[in-house]
Length: 291
Image 1 (cartoon, rainbow, N blue to C red):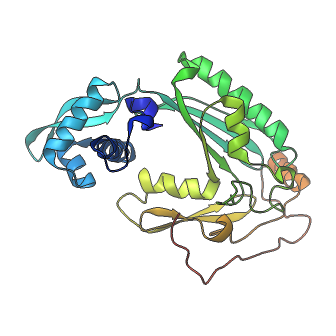
Image 2: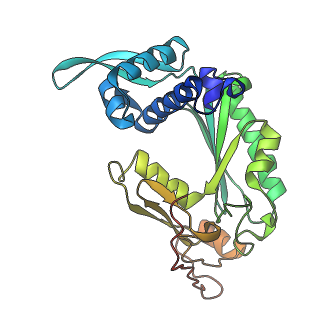
């Protein structure tokens, strides 16, 4: 994604060369600004470990290329410059599949939501129908923003099931039986023609809290998601921990039927499942490290 934004070509790079080092520094600065929303140049230097002179040169280059915006501010009573990603540098798409809904949001790199819409959908029934609806909704929302499709840098895709980190497919056929053998990222990327990053919805919730919510400033957190099942997203040392097969945090699954969910929606009240919920716990004594 960064190559498209700042115009650095990988084919020109040799490992260990000045070009390769410069590209790595560019990525560090852009990543720091993206995660924080906005930073002063002094804060960028502290976050990346780069010298003040290097940060100043990189910020100037990124500003000239339209990737970042620089505005006057103050820090500690002194004049400073605040650096944030440019709203014109590109747009990103968020696609969230729940068991009973589809939600799509379009935003820019300045962290502004430009368009958002949700609609009911029985995701469990058919993967093909789910992706058809997602493709249609994404394209329609892009049109409403007035921004060309060529400005789309990538898509973040959330699904209500564990993703096998080695294959990219859903790691449990019992949670989404209609998605067996599907690689969600490849499927949606083929339809939209842009890179797609997929993850479990609880992991993405944990990442959102880490960047924007109650987890800001901490390195370890657990995000608990309670819906038709119960799951968790785990962050260890600042990175999402997925575990073997991507099942870390998939602690409880409640087998509500479509009838159960429809009845709950119709009555607007809590509904007792037609059969007692089964609880399954996936635990591992082997630590594989954050991925």
